Image (tube, rainbow, N blue to C red):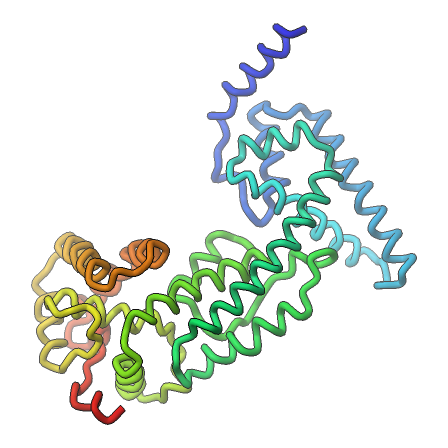
Length: 345
């Protein structure tokens, strides 16, 4: 008996490397995890059938509760919504293992009801964490009259949290947050929704705020007004990520050998930057960007989280520099302004 158990564990461990993690998606974690584990023989079909029956039992209990309380009219659409909410809770619990191997072990060892209840507790904790992040994002906010930025922080996030119910609609998709992040597509690539999406959004927004806080308010105010003038709009109406505007000029200052804490670039300095770009290959631009970021973080000494965020932004910065090189005289990556305007702020 003991030897058989040992042999089974050895067989299971040998099959873990067969898992293709690209087949497992965060938005349908439990379902894709089980499908992949079944494909490589880590889970028997009998266990998969049992998991499905347990999920159905939880759904039936939930629908009976909704009928009893009169919360909603229970129809096919509601049943699918509640099924999605159940899976979202189980997904949340299994995602907490951060590795498919441990998540598969949990599926093998636990009943679905226990995973579901643990997921509900994790979601409640995530809501509290996200509320805390929203408070921090407001406290560290960039001083600006930009409507998109202020509306998102002051109104949209609060409105979404006020109506969010992790118990019955935790999987709700968030749409139309007005303010764009520097790498908003990164969250979409992660394919998360519900409270996970908002937590990721606020975590990134907070990190961008902390980077912006490394620069003087007058420097940022002049940069934003100069950007608005260059694009024939106002600072209120700019549809742009403020972190991106700041880091572009900070990078330019670093390339020029200026102290990175200075965001103001003159027309002449911007011309020098573009002239240098036109003569460089893409590989040279990649090397130059790496060195400029290293200098930038050494000068500004941001905390490790901000440093990691900036380093993770390197590929986008390289892409922008290459695009500016290819655009020639039509490039608009760096924002020029008159340093004398600082004294008027």
